Image (cartoon, rainbow, N blue to C red; front, top):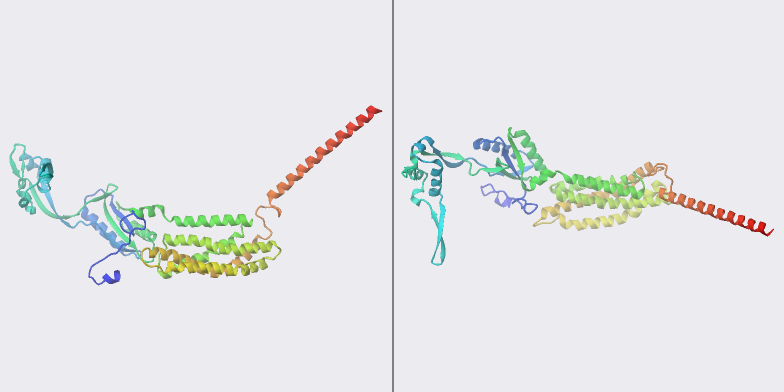
Length: 435
């Protein structure tokens, strides 16, 4: 659409629908420029807003910027001379109420005629409210019942001002909308706006976020913490499985290669690192971790069977080479339709597909070479060490069970000896009685 309309001689902006239905009328970011000085100088506020918009336009992370605020709309200001109005016996409140009825209208009552309901409005005739100068030809009744022309105590002056005054959190505000540039995320756009606001806005002016941008700016980059929690959880599970704090590092340290490949393909395709890409990376951790676990688990079993660390690493890589390639490339082939998707929702499909495909491809190719080496390094470091200091080869739980069984056996033997002694004493006593 941009290519088709670029020669129309007009500025045309296109906006995608919001990522979450109900959060605004379009995608991108939304914010308000706030005037916290409690001033009514709307022309200066327009200057601040214009300077802020110009500063935002210089940032490469932002595009499609526009604002609804303008203080250059033609207006007419009614100036009342209170002193003259009092001399004429005119109450200002009554005069303004009467003017509102004459120019605007007011609903009086309704009646039913011919089976229909008719509403009655009071308003000046069209010929008395056609031009701004007609205001001075209108009359208002004073306290004495006399008709006084508005021109006797009111003048009309032409000026420029805002079309509407909007407030946000009780402050005068200007609404600003825009989009993140291609290759940048909404988080990059929000950070760029914060930097410009901190640098360019004068004292007493601030920004406030709206819609989905409000939640995004408030929550921050929570996906980073989710990614860290995922890694910690995987590490602890593997540490319990291998009974070592070092061997799981052979799995964990094989993941950055895949994550790097994910971002490389996204950059090549011109896609942003948005929430879709981050979901793909989190999924990638599980898939690449599974490949690493296959090699490390087989090598651990071989080492327990008596093989050396080097032999176990080589055997693990050989035995798991074909299964890893088969499952990985089958997964990559399944992602191709997402990478070349088109139509509605294509950006999200291409992003999650690209992040997963790039990470899986590079992570698999380098992983089958790197993981055996990582296992050899950390297995050498873990050699002769146990999960708990001074623990025997058998787990503590089994040793405690064996000691407990030994104590029970000793207690049973002692009880049997005591019974045997009692029987011997009883036999001796019986023999003495017979003698």
